[in-house]
Image (cartoon, rainbow over all chains, first blue to last red; front, side, top):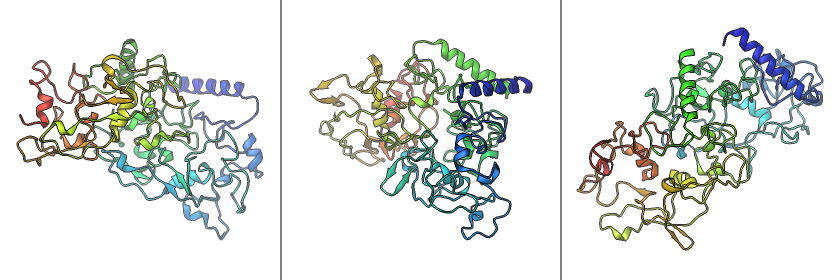
Length: 247
Length: 231
Protein backbone atom coordinates (compact mmCIF):
# COMPACT_ATOMS: atom_id res chain seq x y z
CA UNK A 1 0.00 0.00 0.00
CA UNK A 2 1.35 3.46 -0.83
CA UNK A 3 1.75 6.17 1.75
CA UNK A 4 -1.42 8.02 0.76
CA UNK A 5 -3.40 4.82 1.01
CA UNK A 6 -1.99 4.14 4.43
CA UNK A 7 -2.82 7.64 5.61
CA UNK A 8 -6.38 7.34 4.35
CA UNK A 9 -6.74 4.00 6.09
CA UNK A 10 -5.40 5.39 9.34
CA UNK A 11 -7.63 8.44 9.13
CA UNK A 12 -10.60 6.22 8.44
CA UNK A 13 -9.70 4.06 11.42
CA UNK A 14 -9.35 7.19 13.52
CA UNK A 15 -12.76 8.43 12.44
CA UNK A 16 -14.29 5.06 13.27
CA UNK A 17 -12.77 5.23 16.74
CA UNK A 18 -13.95 8.82 17.15
CA UNK A 19 -17.42 7.86 16.08
CA UNK A 20 -17.46 4.95 18.51
CA UNK A 21 -16.31 7.03 21.47
CA UNK A 22 -19.18 8.71 23.25
CA UNK A 23 -16.91 11.16 25.04
CA UNK A 24 -13.75 12.98 24.15
CA UNK A 25 -11.57 10.46 25.94
CA UNK A 26 -8.10 9.10 25.55
CA UNK A 27 -8.27 5.57 24.28
CA UNK A 28 -6.05 2.60 24.86
CA UNK A 29 -5.40 2.41 21.17
CA UNK A 30 -2.93 4.21 19.01
CA UNK A 31 -3.52 5.87 15.70
CA UNK A 32 0.00 6.25 14.41
CA UNK A 33 -0.61 9.95 13.80
CA UNK A 34 1.64 11.37 16.47
CA UNK A 35 1.22 12.49 20.05
CA UNK A 36 -0.77 15.59 19.19
CA UNK A 37 -3.55 13.65 17.50
CA UNK A 38 -6.88 13.78 19.23
CA UNK A 39 -7.50 10.58 21.21
CA UNK A 40 -3.87 9.56 21.28
CA UNK A 41 -3.45 7.55 24.49
CA UNK A 42 -0.70 9.72 25.95
CA UNK A 43 -2.16 13.08 25.05
CA UNK A 44 -3.42 14.31 28.39
CA UNK A 45 -4.79 17.70 27.44
CA UNK A 46 -8.29 17.12 26.24
CA UNK A 47 -9.52 13.75 27.40
CA UNK A 48 -11.20 12.54 30.55
CA UNK A 49 -7.95 11.46 32.17
CA UNK A 50 -6.17 14.62 31.08
CA UNK A 51 -8.90 16.69 32.66
CA UNK A 52 -8.41 14.79 35.88
CA UNK A 53 -4.65 14.83 36.14
CA UNK A 54 -3.30 17.67 34.02
CA UNK A 55 -4.21 21.29 34.54
CA UNK A 56 -1.22 22.66 32.63
CA UNK A 57 -2.72 22.28 29.20
CA UNK A 58 0.62 20.98 27.99
CA UNK A 59 1.32 17.59 26.45
CA UNK A 60 5.03 16.89 26.92
CA UNK A 61 5.22 18.23 30.46
CA UNK A 62 3.44 15.29 32.04
CA UNK A 63 6.58 13.28 31.30
CA UNK A 64 9.36 15.68 30.32
CA UNK A 65 10.45 19.18 31.29
CA UNK A 66 13.12 21.40 29.71
CA UNK A 67 14.40 22.69 33.06
CA UNK A 68 14.24 20.71 36.24
CA UNK A 69 14.63 23.80 38.44
CA UNK A 70 16.74 21.78 40.84
CA UNK A 71 14.00 19.89 42.53
CA UNK A 72 15.19 17.73 45.33
CA UNK A 73 13.76 14.63 43.73
CA UNK A 74 16.21 14.89 40.82
CA UNK A 75 13.88 13.09 38.53
CA UNK A 76 16.08 14.13 35.63
CA UNK A 77 18.54 11.43 36.68
CA UNK A 78 16.12 8.97 35.14
CA UNK A 79 17.07 10.42 31.79
CA UNK A 80 15.19 12.09 28.95
CA UNK A 81 14.49 15.13 31.12
CA UNK A 82 12.08 13.06 33.10
CA UNK A 83 9.49 15.07 34.99
CA UNK A 84 7.30 12.40 36.54
CA UNK A 85 7.57 10.56 39.78
CA UNK A 86 8.96 7.07 39.37
CA UNK A 87 7.96 3.99 41.26
CA UNK A 88 9.93 2.83 44.26
CA UNK A 89 8.59 -0.70 43.91
CA UNK A 90 10.78 -3.77 43.88
CA UNK A 91 9.65 -6.04 41.09
CA UNK A 92 9.67 -9.78 40.54
CA UNK A 93 11.31 -10.06 37.13
CA UNK A 94 10.63 -12.62 34.43
CA UNK A 95 12.24 -15.92 35.38
CA UNK A 96 15.03 -16.71 32.93
CA UNK A 97 15.20 -20.29 34.12
CA UNK A 98 11.87 -21.04 32.45
CA UNK A 99 13.53 -20.87 29.06
CA UNK A 100 16.33 -22.93 27.58
CA UNK A 101 17.12 -20.38 24.92
CA UNK A 102 16.99 -17.18 26.90
CA UNK A 103 20.49 -16.36 27.96
CA UNK A 104 20.62 -12.62 27.41
CA UNK A 105 21.48 -10.61 30.48
CA UNK A 106 18.45 -9.32 32.28
CA UNK A 107 18.74 -6.42 34.69
CA UNK A 108 17.93 -7.12 38.32
CA UNK A 109 15.21 -4.45 38.17
CA UNK A 110 13.57 -2.56 35.30
CA UNK A 111 15.87 0.15 34.01
CA UNK A 112 16.21 2.59 31.16
CA UNK A 113 13.00 3.63 29.50
CA UNK A 114 11.01 0.79 31.09
CA UNK A 115 11.51 2.48 34.44
CA UNK A 116 9.84 5.54 32.97
CA UNK A 117 6.82 3.63 31.62
CA UNK A 118 6.36 1.95 34.96
CA UNK A 119 6.23 5.40 36.55
CA UNK A 120 2.57 5.24 35.66
CA UNK A 121 1.95 1.74 34.40
CA UNK A 122 2.82 -0.23 37.53
CA UNK A 123 -0.20 1.41 39.11
CA UNK A 124 1.55 2.57 42.27
CA UNK A 125 2.38 6.16 41.31
CA UNK A 126 -0.26 8.81 40.75
CA UNK A 127 -0.53 9.92 37.16
CA UNK A 128 -0.58 13.54 38.30
CA UNK A 129 2.69 13.17 40.22
CA UNK A 130 4.60 15.33 37.76
CA UNK A 131 6.15 18.78 37.66
CA UNK A 132 6.47 20.12 41.18
CA UNK A 133 3.84 17.81 42.54
CA UNK A 134 5.37 15.19 44.74
CA UNK A 135 2.69 14.20 47.16
CA UNK A 136 0.59 11.11 47.20
CA UNK A 137 -2.34 11.41 44.90
CA UNK A 138 -5.36 9.27 44.33
CA UNK A 139 -5.10 9.07 40.60
CA UNK A 140 -3.00 5.97 40.17
CA UNK A 141 -3.72 3.82 37.17
CA UNK A 142 -4.84 1.15 39.54
CA UNK A 143 -7.54 3.44 40.87
CA UNK A 144 -8.58 4.65 37.45
CA UNK A 145 -10.35 1.55 36.26
CA UNK A 146 -9.86 0.41 32.73
CA UNK A 147 -6.40 1.81 32.26
CA UNK A 148 -3.39 -0.23 31.35
CA UNK A 149 -1.60 -1.51 34.41
CA UNK A 150 1.06 -4.13 33.93
CA UNK A 151 2.36 -6.23 36.77
CA UNK A 152 -1.01 -6.10 38.43
CA UNK A 153 -0.26 -9.11 40.54
CA UNK A 154 0.97 -8.29 43.99
CA UNK A 155 3.13 -10.97 45.42
CA UNK A 156 3.53 -9.75 48.95
CA UNK A 157 5.42 -6.48 48.56
CA UNK A 158 6.57 -7.24 45.05
CA UNK A 159 5.10 -5.98 41.83
CA UNK A 160 5.02 -9.04 39.70
CA UNK A 161 6.47 -8.88 36.21
CA UNK A 162 6.71 -12.65 35.82
CA UNK A 163 3.61 -12.63 33.66
CA UNK A 164 5.05 -10.01 31.34
CA UNK A 165 7.45 -10.44 28.46
CA UNK A 166 11.02 -9.95 29.72
CA UNK A 167 12.09 -6.30 29.78
CA UNK A 168 15.41 -4.66 30.48
CA UNK A 169 17.00 -7.67 28.84
CA UNK A 170 19.75 -7.75 26.25
CA UNK A 171 18.69 -8.59 22.71
CA UNK A 172 19.49 -10.64 20.83
CA UNK A 173 19.07 -13.00 23.74
CA UNK A 174 20.30 -16.53 23.56
CA UNK A 175 20.99 -18.34 20.32
CA UNK A 176 21.57 -15.29 18.25
CA UNK A 177 22.03 -14.74 14.62
CA UNK A 178 21.64 -18.38 13.76
CA UNK A 179 18.14 -17.57 12.58
CA UNK A 180 16.68 -20.38 14.62
CA UNK A 181 15.17 -18.47 17.48
CA UNK A 182 15.61 -14.79 16.83
CA UNK A 183 15.71 -12.62 13.75
CA UNK A 184 18.58 -10.22 13.26
CA UNK A 185 17.41 -6.98 14.90
CA UNK A 186 19.55 -4.94 12.55
CA UNK A 187 17.53 -6.06 9.55
CA UNK A 188 14.15 -7.10 10.98
CA UNK A 189 11.70 -4.23 10.67
CA UNK A 190 8.43 -3.12 12.23
CA UNK A 191 5.41 -2.22 10.14
CA UNK A 192 6.62 1.30 9.34
CA UNK A 193 10.04 0.09 8.30
CA UNK A 194 12.07 0.96 11.40
CA UNK A 195 14.56 -1.70 12.40
CA UNK A 196 14.15 -3.57 15.66
CA UNK A 197 17.60 -2.32 16.65
CA UNK A 198 16.38 1.26 16.49
CA UNK A 199 13.75 0.42 19.09
CA UNK A 200 16.16 -1.15 21.56
CA UNK A 201 17.33 0.90 24.52
CA UNK A 202 21.09 0.51 24.86
CA UNK A 203 20.67 -2.87 23.25
CA UNK A 204 17.93 -3.94 25.63
CA UNK A 205 14.34 -4.90 24.99
CA UNK A 206 12.11 -2.50 26.87
CA UNK A 207 8.40 -1.66 26.80
CA UNK A 208 9.15 0.77 24.00
CA UNK A 209 10.54 -1.96 21.79
CA UNK A 210 6.99 -3.15 21.06
CA UNK A 211 4.98 -0.11 22.14
CA UNK A 212 5.35 3.25 20.43
CA UNK A 213 4.71 5.64 23.30
CA UNK A 214 4.45 8.78 21.16
CA UNK A 215 2.04 7.15 18.75
CA UNK A 216 4.10 7.99 15.72
CA UNK A 217 4.31 4.54 14.20
CA UNK A 218 1.63 2.64 16.05
CA UNK A 219 -0.72 0.45 14.11
CA UNK A 220 -4.18 1.98 14.37
CA UNK A 221 -6.45 0.19 16.77
CA UNK A 222 -3.68 -1.53 18.72
CA UNK A 223 -2.16 -0.79 22.11
CA UNK A 224 0.44 1.40 20.44
CA UNK A 225 2.02 -1.65 18.86
CA UNK A 226 4.68 -1.23 16.23
CA UNK A 227 3.28 -4.11 14.20
CA UNK A 228 -0.20 -5.61 14.05
CA UNK A 229 -1.04 -8.94 15.64
CA UNK A 230 -4.16 -9.84 13.66
CA UNK A 231 -5.77 -9.68 10.26
CA UNK A 232 -8.37 -7.36 11.78
CA UNK A 233 -5.63 -4.89 12.66
CA UNK A 234 -4.38 -5.02 9.11
CA UNK A 235 -1.52 -7.39 9.73
CA UNK A 236 -0.84 -11.08 9.92
CA UNK A 237 -1.42 -13.45 12.86
CA UNK A 238 1.05 -12.75 15.67
CA UNK A 239 2.93 -10.39 13.38
CA UNK A 240 4.44 -8.44 16.25
CA UNK A 241 5.78 -11.51 18.01
CA UNK A 242 7.17 -12.95 14.82
CA UNK A 243 9.08 -9.78 13.99
CA UNK A 244 11.69 -10.92 16.52
CA UNK A 245 10.85 -14.53 17.27
CA UNK A 246 11.53 -17.13 14.61
CA UNK A 247 8.95 -19.86 15.08
CA UNK B 1 9.79 -5.80 2.44
CA UNK B 2 6.80 -5.96 0.14
CA UNK B 3 7.97 -9.33 -1.17
CA UNK B 4 8.31 -10.66 2.35
CA UNK B 5 4.85 -9.39 3.19
CA UNK B 6 3.39 -11.04 0.11
CA UNK B 7 5.18 -14.26 1.01
CA UNK B 8 3.80 -14.19 4.51
CA UNK B 9 0.32 -13.42 3.23
CA UNK B 10 0.53 -16.25 0.72
CA UNK B 11 1.69 -18.67 3.38
CA UNK B 12 -1.11 -17.49 5.63
CA UNK B 13 -3.66 -17.99 2.89
CA UNK B 14 -2.44 -21.51 2.33
CA UNK B 15 -2.62 -22.12 6.08
CA UNK B 16 -6.06 -20.58 6.15
CA UNK B 17 -7.31 -22.93 3.49
CA UNK B 18 -6.44 -26.02 5.47
CA UNK B 19 -9.50 -26.32 7.63
CA UNK B 20 -8.25 -29.54 9.15
CA UNK B 21 -5.17 -29.10 11.27
CA UNK B 22 -2.63 -31.69 10.25
CA UNK B 23 -0.84 -33.74 12.86
CA UNK B 24 2.30 -33.82 10.77
CA UNK B 25 5.11 -31.32 10.63
CA UNK B 26 7.41 -30.35 7.81
CA UNK B 27 10.03 -28.19 9.55
CA UNK B 28 8.92 -24.96 7.86
CA UNK B 29 7.84 -23.15 11.01
CA UNK B 30 4.70 -22.53 12.98
CA UNK B 31 2.71 -21.15 10.04
CA UNK B 32 0.43 -23.87 8.72
CA UNK B 33 1.82 -26.33 11.24
CA UNK B 34 -0.19 -28.56 13.58
CA UNK B 35 -0.02 -25.81 16.21
CA UNK B 36 -1.13 -22.95 13.99
CA UNK B 37 -4.70 -22.37 15.16
CA UNK B 38 -5.11 -18.99 13.48
CA UNK B 39 -7.93 -20.30 11.32
CA UNK B 40 -9.72 -22.28 14.02
CA UNK B 41 -13.26 -21.13 14.68
CA UNK B 42 -12.69 -21.02 18.43
CA UNK B 43 -9.77 -18.61 18.05
CA UNK B 44 -11.50 -15.26 17.70
CA UNK B 45 -8.46 -13.05 17.33
CA UNK B 46 -6.86 -15.45 14.89
CA UNK B 47 -3.46 -15.00 16.47
CA UNK B 48 -0.96 -17.84 16.56
CA UNK B 49 1.24 -17.32 19.61
CA UNK B 50 -1.59 -16.19 21.89
CA UNK B 51 -3.19 -19.63 22.23
CA UNK B 52 -0.17 -20.62 24.33
CA UNK B 53 1.75 -17.44 25.21
CA UNK B 54 0.85 -13.84 26.05
CA UNK B 55 3.13 -10.83 26.58
CA UNK B 56 1.08 -9.47 29.48
CA UNK B 57 -0.88 -11.67 31.83
CA UNK B 58 -3.05 -8.79 33.04
CA UNK B 59 -3.15 -10.21 36.51
CA UNK B 60 -5.51 -13.08 35.97
CA UNK B 61 -6.23 -14.94 39.15
CA UNK B 62 -5.11 -18.23 37.65
CA UNK B 63 -1.49 -16.98 37.48
CA UNK B 64 -0.87 -19.25 34.52
CA UNK B 65 2.42 -17.47 33.92
CA UNK B 66 3.87 -19.34 36.87
CA UNK B 67 4.08 -22.29 34.51
CA UNK B 68 6.77 -20.33 32.70
CA UNK B 69 7.26 -19.10 29.14
CA UNK B 70 4.47 -16.54 29.52
CA UNK B 71 1.98 -19.36 29.50
CA UNK B 72 -1.53 -18.29 28.56
CA UNK B 73 -3.40 -21.59 28.56
CA UNK B 74 -5.16 -23.50 31.27
CA UNK B 75 -3.10 -26.39 32.61
CA UNK B 76 -4.34 -29.73 33.75
CA UNK B 77 -4.97 -30.40 37.42
CA UNK B 78 -4.67 -34.15 36.91
CA UNK B 79 -2.43 -36.38 38.98
CA UNK B 80 -0.57 -38.70 36.69
CA UNK B 81 0.74 -42.19 37.11
CA UNK B 82 4.32 -41.83 35.94
CA UNK B 83 6.45 -44.32 34.05
CA UNK B 84 7.48 -47.11 36.39
CA UNK B 85 11.24 -47.01 36.68
CA UNK B 86 11.49 -50.36 38.33
CA UNK B 87 10.65 -51.89 35.00
CA UNK B 88 14.11 -50.95 33.85
CA UNK B 89 17.46 -52.13 35.14
CA UNK B 90 19.35 -49.24 33.62
CA UNK B 91 17.05 -46.34 34.31
CA UNK B 92 18.12 -44.54 37.45
CA UNK B 93 17.98 -40.89 36.43
CA UNK B 94 15.84 -38.80 38.74
CA UNK B 95 12.25 -38.66 37.58
CA UNK B 96 9.91 -35.97 38.87
CA UNK B 97 6.91 -37.12 40.89
CA UNK B 98 4.61 -35.40 38.36
CA UNK B 99 5.21 -33.94 34.89
CA UNK B 100 6.95 -30.58 35.15
CA UNK B 101 8.66 -27.96 33.03
CA UNK B 102 7.57 -27.83 29.42
CA UNK B 103 5.78 -31.20 29.60
CA UNK B 104 3.26 -29.64 31.95
CA UNK B 105 2.54 -27.15 29.17
CA UNK B 106 2.08 -29.80 26.47
CA UNK B 107 -0.25 -31.77 28.71
CA UNK B 108 -2.42 -28.69 29.16
CA UNK B 109 -3.99 -29.76 25.87
CA UNK B 110 -2.65 -33.21 25.17
CA UNK B 111 -3.91 -35.04 28.22
CA UNK B 112 -7.40 -34.36 26.95
CA UNK B 113 -8.75 -32.94 30.21
CA UNK B 114 -8.46 -29.21 29.38
CA UNK B 115 -10.19 -27.57 26.43
CA UNK B 116 -7.88 -26.34 23.67
CA UNK B 117 -9.86 -23.10 23.75
CA UNK B 118 -9.07 -22.55 27.44
CA UNK B 119 -6.70 -19.66 26.82
CA UNK B 120 -6.55 -15.90 27.34
CA UNK B 121 -9.32 -14.93 29.70
CA UNK B 122 -11.33 -18.04 29.03
CA UNK B 123 -11.40 -20.48 31.90
CA UNK B 124 -13.49 -23.34 30.61
CA UNK B 125 -13.03 -24.52 27.06
CA UNK B 126 -15.19 -26.92 25.12
CA UNK B 127 -12.88 -28.14 22.36
CA UNK B 128 -10.76 -31.08 23.43
CA UNK B 129 -7.81 -32.89 21.97
CA UNK B 130 -8.93 -36.23 20.64
CA UNK B 131 -7.53 -39.15 18.73
CA UNK B 132 -3.82 -38.98 18.00
CA UNK B 133 -3.59 -35.56 19.59
CA UNK B 134 -4.45 -37.04 22.95
CA UNK B 135 -1.83 -39.10 24.69
CA UNK B 136 -2.39 -41.23 27.73
CA UNK B 137 -5.74 -42.60 26.71
CA UNK B 138 -5.59 -45.10 29.53
CA UNK B 139 -7.47 -43.94 32.57
CA UNK B 140 -6.62 -45.63 35.82
CA UNK B 141 -9.29 -44.48 38.21
CA UNK B 142 -8.50 -40.88 39.08
CA UNK B 143 -5.11 -41.13 37.47
CA UNK B 144 -4.05 -40.14 34.01
CA UNK B 145 -1.79 -42.96 33.09
CA UNK B 146 1.66 -42.17 31.71
CA UNK B 147 3.00 -45.68 32.29
CA UNK B 148 2.57 -46.40 28.62
CA UNK B 149 4.49 -43.31 27.57
CA UNK B 150 8.26 -42.86 27.32
CA UNK B 151 9.52 -41.38 30.62
CA UNK B 152 9.33 -37.63 30.76
CA UNK B 153 10.45 -35.05 33.31
CA UNK B 154 13.41 -37.33 33.90
CA UNK B 155 17.08 -36.42 34.08
CA UNK B 156 19.26 -37.40 31.12
CA UNK B 157 21.74 -39.00 30.90
CA UNK B 158 20.02 -41.61 32.97
CA UNK B 159 21.49 -44.69 34.49
CA UNK B 160 25.07 -45.35 33.66
CA UNK B 161 26.83 -42.14 32.73
CA UNK B 162 26.90 -40.79 29.24
CA UNK B 163 29.94 -42.74 28.14
CA UNK B 164 28.17 -45.92 28.92
CA UNK B 165 26.91 -48.64 26.68
CA UNK B 166 23.32 -47.48 26.81
CA UNK B 167 23.12 -43.79 26.06
CA UNK B 168 24.82 -41.42 23.66
CA UNK B 169 26.42 -38.22 24.89
CA UNK B 170 23.66 -35.60 24.59
CA UNK B 171 26.20 -32.81 24.27
CA UNK B 172 27.56 -34.17 21.01
CA UNK B 173 24.77 -36.31 19.63
CA UNK B 174 22.57 -34.40 17.19
CA UNK B 175 19.09 -34.54 15.71
CA UNK B 176 18.48 -34.23 11.97
CA UNK B 177 18.65 -30.41 12.14
CA UNK B 178 22.10 -30.57 13.68
CA UNK B 179 20.91 -29.40 17.08
CA UNK B 180 22.37 -31.32 19.97
CA UNK B 181 20.22 -33.49 22.17
CA UNK B 182 21.38 -31.38 25.10
CA UNK B 183 19.82 -28.28 23.53
CA UNK B 184 16.46 -30.02 23.53
CA UNK B 185 16.56 -30.96 27.19
CA UNK B 186 14.62 -28.82 29.63
CA UNK B 187 16.85 -28.02 32.56
CA UNK B 188 18.61 -31.29 31.86
CA UNK B 189 15.42 -33.31 31.68
CA UNK B 190 13.85 -35.29 28.88
CA UNK B 191 10.46 -33.77 28.14
CA UNK B 192 7.94 -34.07 25.30
CA UNK B 193 9.88 -31.35 23.49
CA UNK B 194 13.04 -33.43 23.47
CA UNK B 195 11.61 -35.58 20.68
CA UNK B 196 8.81 -33.35 19.41
CA UNK B 197 9.50 -29.92 17.92
CA UNK B 198 6.40 -27.99 18.97
CA UNK B 199 7.02 -24.96 16.74
CA UNK B 200 7.74 -27.07 13.67
CA UNK B 201 11.06 -25.42 13.02
CA UNK B 202 13.13 -28.55 12.72
CA UNK B 203 10.57 -31.30 12.41
CA UNK B 204 11.15 -34.00 9.85
CA UNK B 205 8.49 -33.95 7.16
CA UNK B 206 5.60 -36.36 7.45
CA UNK B 207 6.25 -37.12 11.11
CA UNK B 208 4.51 -36.07 14.30
CA UNK B 209 6.85 -33.12 14.69
CA UNK B 210 9.74 -35.48 15.34
CA UNK B 211 13.30 -34.21 15.45
CA UNK B 212 14.54 -37.26 13.54
CA UNK B 213 12.85 -39.69 11.19
CA UNK B 214 11.89 -43.17 12.33
CA UNK B 215 11.60 -44.93 8.99
CA UNK B 216 13.54 -45.30 5.79
CA UNK B 217 11.00 -42.97 4.20
CA UNK B 218 11.66 -40.17 6.69
CA UNK B 219 15.18 -41.00 7.84
CA UNK B 220 16.62 -44.24 9.06
CA UNK B 221 14.94 -47.14 10.81
CA UNK B 222 14.21 -46.05 14.39
CA UNK B 223 16.51 -43.09 13.83
CA UNK B 224 14.84 -41.05 16.55
CA UNK B 225 15.19 -43.71 19.26
CA UNK B 226 18.74 -44.49 18.28
CA UNK B 227 19.77 -40.85 18.55
CA UNK B 228 19.81 -41.29 22.32
CA UNK B 229 19.67 -45.02 22.92
CA UNK B 230 22.60 -47.24 22.02
CA UNK B 231 21.19 -50.60 21.04
